[in-house]
Structure formats: C-alpha cells, structure tokens
Length: 293
Image (cartoon, rainbow, N blue to C red; front, side, top):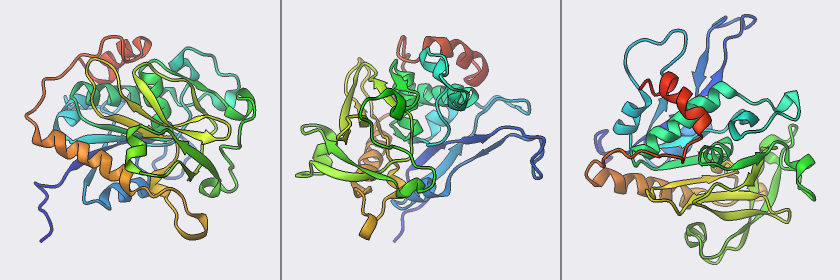
C-alpha cells in the first residue's frame, strides 16, 4: 500500500528566479520563480512531496507568510543550483561583469538557509547551493576556478553541459565515505565555474576534485547547534549510468531524507538564533525584507 500524503516527507525546494524582463513575450515584465524539473523528480523518486519555497517579498507581495512559516511546516529544504553567487555576498568586488551573479537571489537563499537552520531542519545544497551555504556561514569562493586556482581542471563546459565530468576523491572517515564504503574515487558531472576558496568554519570537506583539489562535498560538523547541513558541488539529480556513469545518487538522497524523517519524529524543536553564523551584511536586509521580522 502506498503511504498517504500525511505520512510522506514534505521537502522544500528553493526557487530559481527569472527577473522581470519587458522584452519577454510571455509574462512580460513579471518576475518568475520556478524549479528545474530534474531535481524535483529526484526528490520525488524516494516518495517525498516537493514544495517550492517562493520568495515572500517583491513588488506584488501580499499577506504575512514568511520563510519561517515554511521552515516550521516542511521537513527539510534543498537549495537549488543556478546563477552565480554575487561576490559582494562574501566581501569581494566582481572581477568581471559576467561574474556579477544574482544579488537578489542571494538574499533570498541566505534567508532560506537561515530560516531552516534556525528551525533545526535539514538543509542540502546542490552546486550553487553548496556555494551559497559556504558563503552563508562565512566562507568565500573562487569567482572563476580556471583563472584563480593554479592547475585547475575545466569545471564547466557550456557546450557539453552535464556531459562534462571529472574525478573526485572521497575523504576517508567522513559521513560521505560511510555512505560509499570502500569507494575512494569516483566520477561526477561538473557544471560550475565558481567554487569554494575558503571553507566556512564548522564545515568539513568530504570530497575533493581530483587532481586539482577543489572542494566537491561539504558537511557541517561543528558549531554549537549542529544540525544536518550538507552539499555537493555536482548535481546528483543528473546521475548517469552506462557509458557516462557517475557516482550513484541514491545513498546521498536517502541520507538527507533519513535526516528529515528523524527530525519529523522528534518533538518540535525550539527555534535557534544563529548569531555570527549568517552573513552580517545580509542579515539586516533579510530581517527587513525577506523574513519580514
């Protein structure tokens, strides 16, 4: 018998943005928030109900719904891939106009991470999601790996997109290594040109790109509040078999969902404050504009 809707996990998925564009023939001048199909289907493959977490602010905002309400209601959240992170989010000026990123989405994503972390709900990041999580907790990024990291592999190829691959080395003794016992090296898709330069405090690298040594998987292992926060630089939802085989995504997905299920069985935790953990520069704006405190 399939489980009922009441017993299934409810997983939030952060929104991607298409900002208002007067030249667009459909939804002219309107802001679009959306999810990419593959990642929603990835979560649904394990029976989870997927809910996009829309940004509650903007020119058309109405009502009193906040991200904290979503964090209280949902069992966990996945931070979507997408646009570059704005360098100003980690205290740098953009080195090229093409690397400006999306400041508005950064503020929204930082607020989502803050809301779910404060609620003690599991957070999992994919690609941009990994970078955003690292920045949210005080880390920094390479604005462009190829030009800033000596000996870098090609981590993004616009022509081949998700058919661009490289090897990773899994760090032994980590939780990720425990999910793949006996596996030290594997292959992943690579669809990014930014990456972690300075790892946020309280986080551990669980996998490195091989041989150039860019962090490819991280997990929060320190800090007074703990909680499940993990991320991969690759897209596990784009897992391939056969000739283009990449690391099996099943263990990663089940690990996250098991953490969500465990949290659902526990009594509702008291919300936690995260002083000094989320970027101070963004926090003032988030409280005013996104969390509507």
